[in-house]
Amino acid sequence: METRTKDAKLFHHLVKSHRKNRGNAIMDLHVSDVCLSGEQNVMEGFKLHFRNLATPEEASVLENLQYHQAVEYEIGLITQIVKDKIIPPATLEELQKAIKSIDKGKSADIYGITVEHILHAGKNLEWLFLNLINIIFKEGKVPDMLKEGLLTPVFKIKGEKNIAANYRGITVLPVLNEVTETITKVRINPAVLVTQNVTQRGFTAGSVPANAALPVEEIYREAKYNNQEYELVLLDAKSAFDVVIHSHLMKRLYHAGIDNKHWTIIQSMHTNATSAVKWNGQTSQLCNVLQGVRQDGILSTDLYKLYINPLLNMLETSSLGCRIGKILCNTSACADDVALMSKKTTDMQLQVNMAKHFCRHVGV
Image (cartoon, rainbow, N blue to C red; front, top):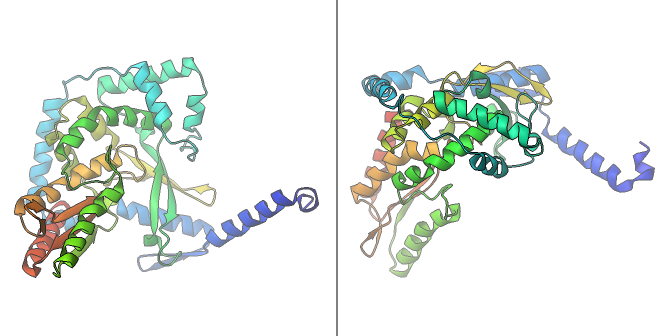
């Protein structure tokens, strides 16, 4: 209370912060048809919600059981093919660049460590980190303790605050895992860019998400200039990053040209993965993450783009939809947001059907 008279600026900052925190507090949470009340139960409710998202629905697997089994069999073959294909050890330069590139000011991981600790710890810790990463690169395996994520529910700024589905789970992984991911991402990114469909503009080096709007704007301008009608359908997969089937993802990764121990490292990152929910200063017990890529993960956007890349390829080769001159402009994508454009209702329906079939096929 002395702050009110001694430092008015600090006092008002504290009041504003208190009001903000109080406004974010919720006393009950709806998870599907269940309402949970009380601070502890709210945290358990978030844990239940995100555990459900991280667990494959049996119905979706059974619907495509034959295809799913074929993918699982292929993964077994790929595992045998790549297990002995060694990769170059990480260098000190790679490590230092990786540490500097990781976003600063993030929450601490489940062990209370931030990237700032590593950044200012000195050369001895750098060499220790480098040795640990090179053990991972040599063995092609990530220890389970480095796959324990700390998940914070973040409100999506739409809908009711007491509905769990209106929250996005942002996961902070152990710093050593993030550094390993960063080095791996730099190494595999050229293969991702070569494979990535040209209509995908999300999280792409040398581009910005706003570029995905350019084809949509140009189609609009042309249709307006020629006094024509056209149809625009916006696809947004529900909880897209959370429902990625790992075996299908690893198949895409191999066919993108990642056919050495970088593949086994990424597979290991998604095997025996766990997360704990952090809410209002409390942390839940760990729960298994059996599907999905971590939101805010270093590799997650590249992996998700590979996951939905076949859909964009199918739409491109279909030759359905809008054109500007002789150039096909039927699709534009920014990560999981996909726009379909057509001047014919029949073409649009076929494009939507293709997207629906793809999503049902891979469980999105």
